Image (cartoon, rainbow, N blue to C red; front, side, top):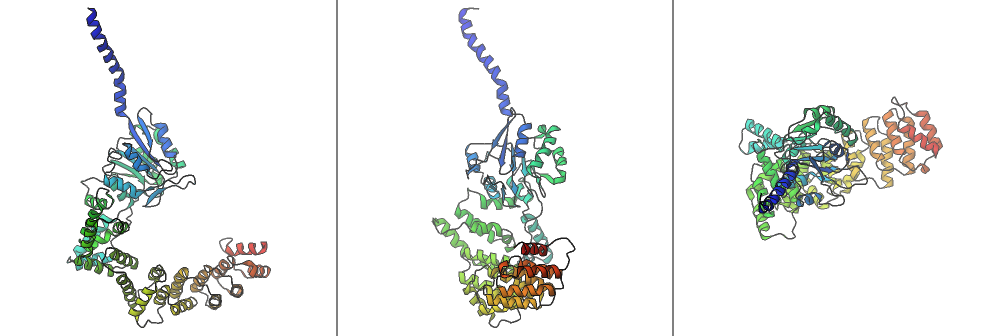
Length: 556
């Protein structure tokens, strides 16, 4: 072969040899799967996967960056693409994955997962997922978080549906909007073939790790990133309630609901676009708008007057000016069975510009009066009134609408007392020592929010409780008194006198519950300890609070 030919061919041969050497690496690089991990609590599950998955076939990427709040967004910017996702953390039942470790503060809000999934602001991160492993309690619990309350069916009838059709549509809405944890995870991990999680309590990492070890020892590594549910894995975790489900697809019957829900989380939709979408929701039958109440409330909480663009203002004005949608919405809210739902809906109406502050107060007062007339007023309404923080304006509006309140309605008095009426306060406190169990329960709720601070009043209550018949009401009254942190010596003496007279173990335990929280220096400790020992009714289930009180008295 001529020398010139050898000069030309040698580089070609060298290049071919080089390519042949690199070829296996190119193939291998294409086969490497990325296992993304989000470790907000125990690393046991992650480390077990890492030990058993060959490093030349699986690359592990921990998405959590300690001390950095935007770690998920950071992963997006780095171009991470996950084939497998492993989330390890306690799950609070719907809001976030969190840790119980004092050395860590990271957490993963479900809303952030929804934002990433719905916005496609990070299209690569989860786009090629084959499997998701959710190591947290109730992550795939199928129990609906909300149901279709009775007013939904009634509103559909008002809208023109027959009772039978209204009932069927209400059931459909409940199914579509129930939004169990499983449904929510299916929506987030759209098109993922296999999403593993737990229908109930999940094992802690130190217990999950050994089960995963057994899975991998049996050849489980070959099943990772295939997208096929593993019968072996499900069998090993069967006693702990592990289950698997596919992610939502466009062919799913509830895909349209996901599209609606995503509009709230999608970063690509402008503020004006979201306002217009909420307006469109509220123009639908009120029953469907009600099922979106949680999402609309969360969105409305983000509205501020600052930096509002002209298009935002125009969209809000169009919404506020929609009289037809307003009347339909308010009619539904006034018909709500649950008072808390009615209050929430009226508060949202105010934020949307459909009610003024005075209008909202009037609606609250109207609800209280209407429920009082139906004898349907109870602890729930008292809680709502006390939560308004002594709002005298609302109290005045309620007093105006009530005009002549019936003196025998303790629940109505408790609502008025919560809103600052002194006479009603005295009436509720007096009811604590009455003979009606229901009234005692109402007083208990009220005094939880508005404790007795006057020593003379507290002394009267204590004396009154001592004279009550031995029954459940007396026990509840004593439990209420325990929460008041009694320190008045005369009141404590009255309770000490009541103890030997008590014919019920529950009453004696309730008295002990008060005395154990009291300042023991105000008591004749040795005499009281002897009285307790002598007159106590023997506990059938071992030592109780009375024994603890005796030991403390003797020790001091």
